Image 1 (cartoon, rainbow, N blue to C red):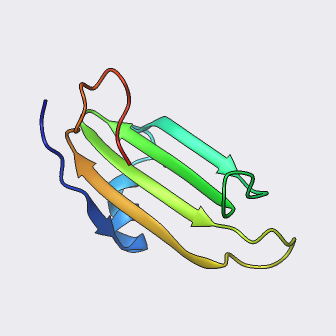
Image 2: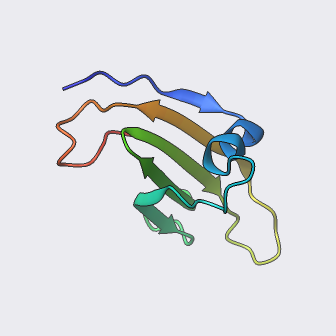
Image 3: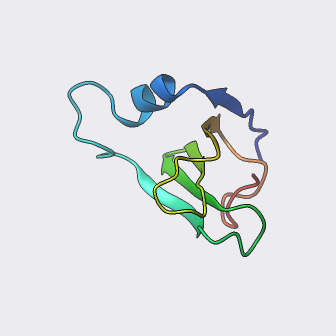
Amino acid sequence: MSKSVVRKLTCRERDTYLIPAGTPRYEVWSVESSLTDLLGDLGNPVMKTTWLKGGIRLQDIRHPSVLDGVSDVEPCEHYYWEGSDDDEEGGHNE
């Protein structure tokens, strides 16, 4: 069991990790988990995607508006971490 350190990324830093120069988009990443709750059934509307490559994870979070044609109600968020607080078999902690 290893301890992970989560670091918040800017959009540019996130793109540098996920889409390195000269690499097709998301080629070496897989989606580990995702949640799309556009109507806010679980709270505020949210879209989360956690990308996995080896022991490295990146998470994207969007806060969409429930109204069509209205931009996100909050800025997007991006997080990076290596390792995990769990046993790697049961997912990860957010």
